[in-house]
Image (cartoon, rainbow, N blue to C red):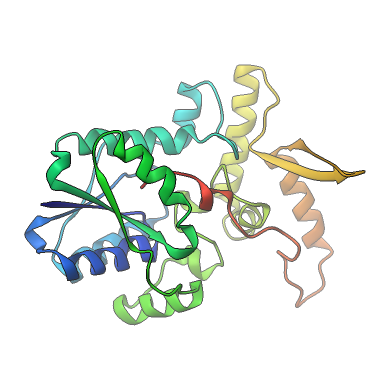
Length: 272
């Protein structure tokens, strides 16, 4: 049997997943791969290198790296909370092409889905079963570890933890940016990495002008008289809103209070 590990980039989906798979299967049957994205935080590769050295197993970067905005321009649409052409093209389709070299009957795909994400396995299993592959979530039966515990474990094992986790981000992908991220995640990106935030802000404006539309990545959701709705929210308007809030924030108060910290991408089927 071939055991293909789809590395996600986070502590669980990179380190713990490799650890659990190698505990069950011979190392010479295990192949670890990751789909690179141009704007990943450097700590993604630092973690991959540390895991590779610790377990003496290469983690291969498959396919060419690309910026998500390259995808948005080629597809003539931006990603949003309901559609993720970036993940589809740079992750799912790239992984499908890689897996085509294996025979489904003697190959198992391993993904870093944990117990709180088990609902994602329905879509992941369904998608891969179309190609005949079986999928295993090796972390799904383990007790959940919160971010602080994962960070502490990572520090003890490798002497560091990914910077985005230390800054309170919910995941370690796409440099902290995601078209399905909640406002709390976007606010952290603006707060800790304003240059990266402004890059995405400029690219959103450029895409709007180039294709003559007013679509946005973010939305303002509301409920009035029992009716729910949403209004477009540009990255520029969100930045101005947060900068105004922070300018009047008293010392000691949480700059992210009241913002949804749960990224929508937690529930996507970027199957990894």
